[in-house]
Amino acid sequence: MTGPRVVIVDDHQMFRAGVRVELGDAVEVVGDAADVESAVTLIRSTVPDVVLLDVHMPGGGGKAVIEAVAATHPEVKFLALSVSDAAEDVISVIRAGARGYVTKTISGDELAHAIRRVADGDAVFSPRLAGFVLDAFAGAAGAPVVDPELDLLTNREREVLRLIARGYTYKELARRLEISVKTVETHVSAVLRKLQLSSRHELTRWATDRRLI
Amino acid sequence: MSPVAAACEHRGVRTTPRPPFERGGDGAIVAGVASGLARHLGIDTLKVRLAFAALTISGGAGILLYGAFWLAVPRRIGDETTAVTDRVQLPAIGALVVGGLLLAHEIGIFGIDLGLWPVLVVAAGLGLVWRQADEASRARWLGAVTDHRSQRLRIFGGASLLVAGLVGFLASNNELQAARDSLVAIVVVVAGLALMLAPWGWQLVQDLGAERRERIRSQERAELAAHLHDSVLQTLALIQRRADAPGEVQRLARSQERALRAWLYARRDEMDPTRTLAGAVEAAAADVETDHGMPVEVVTVGDCPMDERLEAVVRAAREAMVNAAKFADVDHVDVFMEVDEGDVTVFVRDTGVGFDLGSVPGDRRGIADSVVGRMTRHGGSAIVRSAPGEGTEVELRLTRVAS
Image (cartoon, rainbow over all chains, first blue to last red; front, top):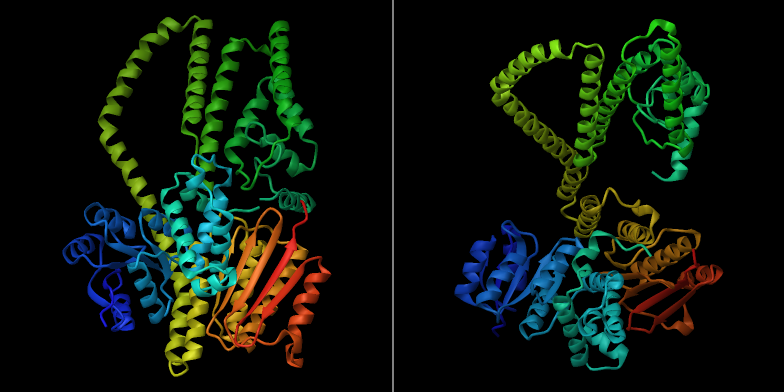
């Protein structure tokens, strides 16, 4: 079986090799790159389905890669992969256009699964990202709501994010809320869209002042 | 520093037999000489200030003494608070000195017959400039960002006063004409010297800046190296020795990762993480990871300061994590903590073997006693959801007391 075509972008050679081995035959790795410039060139020449992207890299980080590629190849999808705990970095890569965020401790099977989901157009929210997003929207509570469609999460979306943060898979979540997995995916995609398009400035700034209630 | 801590430190200083003579500290107005001397001698600051004023009136010794102390006595390093009453004293004592000097001048005692006003203006100007220099040096010690605009304004103000005073002094002695001729010569020479030395001076300033940056950088490097040596290298050495025990290696790597993360992402200006709920939950998870070799993924949303009731929540959560680590037979446990305006909620979840809630085996009494009991005692609630093969989730909820 040939899975989605994948490019791995990470400045650690050891990590790129490790991911290749772990992914095995589940996906087709068409190349890897170690910095922003070579990554952009590689992605433009191979046009993969999904780019596994490190958040922190010399030359502008994952955000720079997404912005450069999106200008010429908007169809390429990005999945952010990081050891970083810094919420503002993760949120800014997502806002640049990545369709999900997973931590580097993820297992090979889970990673392959996440890649397939991103390739299918879904958003991949790890528990940690769900927590960051909840914090981001709650932290923006003081900012004026310009567009309620974009600036606020619905109760259902918050419920979905909370369950993801609690460690529920989409399937478990769907069963718990008695909705279909498709509906869960719709909610998550909606949250991703809001995160990327909302202009409430606190969304990016929130993380600098940790929220004490 | 919190007000309480400041108060403690304050008291600590007072109880030592005789504090060292240091300027500044609590109650400093101009340079903190008077308040420092008062602290050193153990007498009231106001009396010291009045003594300086009296000495100034009777021939100017007070102001000279003050200046000498200002130069010679080291500044006390620490936080400084000046009470309103202290600030109010400044104009009062100033008025007293000016009035006294005028009186002395008027009745012609002590033989002061310099133009009085120019002297006072010069003193004020000098005070302003010195004080500015003093504060700039303190700011450098504290590494604080200084407000350059107000700094320049004050130096400029002080210098203008100084020049005005000197000109006034010369004018009152009818020597302005003579002074102007020599002044022109001096200005020309100084300007020439400045032109000659300018490139060298500029280079010096640049070098100083570069040297300072390099020093800061190497300090940072040393700190990082020390930290890596103490923690990461030790762990790597341990991992090499225990390479045959995968479980142990994973445990070591996890705990090192956690420690390094905490070190890297800790905000030093922020609240002590051990005093907030999120920090306490993370710490509990780290304990469970270390003690039971079970990875615990913690996600937190919001945060609040710890209190006694939250302590109970953390202990209950810890108990739930330990239970999951011991009995669930899984590869990781998820913990989610959320703080909002009304509630604190913590979820501890595993996808393991689960159990029948109706027939809790004897060895799993922990859940009932530690978790549920503890939460109800503190006015919260705990819900345990589980079924054989379905995993277990413990939900802890506590309504926050309005603070």
